[in-house]
Image 1: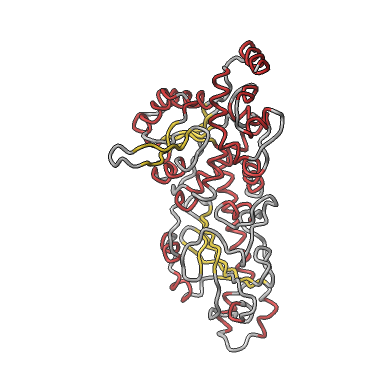
Image 2: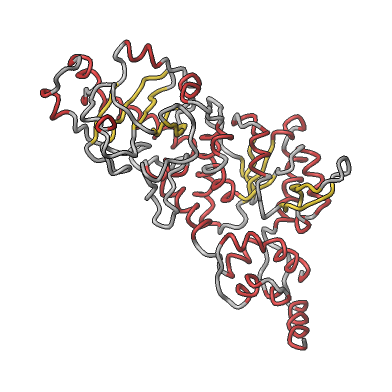
Length: 443
């Protein structure tokens, strides 16, 4: 007890000064920016992403990736850039074409740095319900102002947390990806029957895909917005009908596919659909795994897996192995297949799609090349999800000079950090609220 009192006394006497980048300071800054720089009619669509937990030399890349993600999930036909104001990035959901309901669903889904989930009694029903509310450490007076001005329960989030969640479990809702493959084509203005009748689609068969490690068919459909690329993949390896080389026409079978399409602003949309045309949250493990980050769990999901994997200007390079077998085709409409497996034309179409995507990425990010983007996105996600939280990073996340007050906690993870050791991110998220209260009290 004497040791604890001595430490507390020392901390009170330390010249701690102003908190730097603390959640309370970020909320206060958001309120001030809204009042000073945003027309009142835009308040309901204004949201903020905090850069405060990242060092200055990392913020340019973080801002570029935020802009890429926001433009990728948004439905605007134009590219927009977030506005930086201090440690915050300001975005207008209406400009990007992001639905307010989709943003609120993301922001209320276990966001740990500005909000907390708690159980309350619903006065109307008398039942216990879980609600998402402002955390006490963010400054409840300013938090209430921000909520009232924007009408949002999640008007401010951390930038890296947003990037992770927007490119994984909330991607489909933010980007409004249709539930069915038919809806996917309709949303892109693609008439599959007409394109097939005009022999206007092109494709290739791969003896061994770098993604599935099996034979694979890839095809490109021309839509009014640009290329729509589809794959036809199978879990089965012993059924000849699932082999694109044994059925080079369009009479074979497949289990699921990955779909990438050019959207109106030149960036990409991503979808996973099974053979029945139903949208999938991830590719079955028996078909393919995501090896784009060795620290990952191996699940192939849109949009994160797709961007990390497709490092060659938005697409993976491939060779059309069907070329060498064209003269041996029997029992098919050879002219139709020659048009479909036209490698020269497909290569030119791929090059054009890559050039268009590179230009869109450069515009969205303020100069980053499409070949550089996957690594930048992967680094942010890896740092957040897979790398351990050090005591130094914990202090930065809290916006405080030190974490000495963790000695007052009974939380094993906060005590671990106080002892100079690192913990995983999930544990840190669960302990963050107590950590913020402790360090706020020290100030």
